[in-house]
Image 1 (cartoon, rainbow, N blue to C red):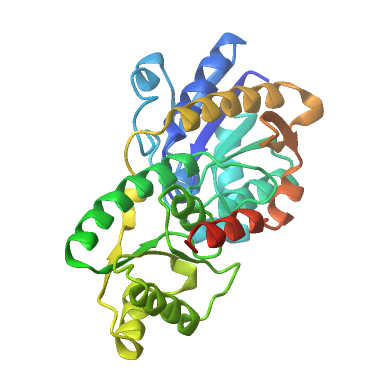
Image 2 (cartoon, one colour):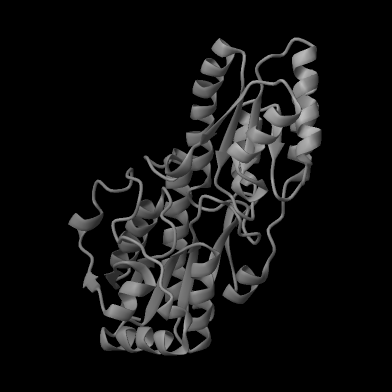
Length: 321
């Protein structure tokens, strides 16, 4: 193998640039040419491909987003789109591909792999919703971003004797709400994996008020409902004063944490090594028990996410007193 390509796909996540840098540096170290594919699968179909150089990756490891940009592509989900992508890879003589992204990106990588393209995946999504790995790149940064906002919101809620409801990302996975909620001492955490009726949550807030706790923090993952809808429900059935905050894209932006930078660097290096090893040219990195290992792409996209019920139950105990 003489030439490989790397792309970022789906939602951006802090740490992608660190992974790109590691892919480039490791590739050059073993005499591989590394080409960047811009704007994800959409850019691959359209031929937005160019050689990466040291200047492209230097002083980028600490930055959020992705220097390769990203996009979503409906065309790539079609047979014709996949064939276009393969023809571009062959035209540029790209012999192996590294895809940095989430579950949807991995399904695309698996589709290319099944058509004979050597592909390695690197899990990059703030949701941490890929069950085959303990952590995805960007999750730790997102949790820290949210945790920092919890304390700001708690300060102003306390000043007005209000309950603050903080909505975070996570349509199918409540890990950001769970981890940030535990770290930020949330009183209630609403996630899709552990449904809690809004009636029970409202009663708990009303009980907190009766015993003198006028300020509470509620974390809600977007997959468990909208913060403002929950506030309207609480206002309707209780006398609790409550305000909603939707954090939005601030969760996904900013400089990656040290953990995400190191994880991305290790996974980027491992991805190149797997491509260079003909026995493992179709797989993905994962972290288990602090070790970077690989699994087949097909296994990665079929493994269901595993919610940390013990951590959720721990927060329920911590919030009682």
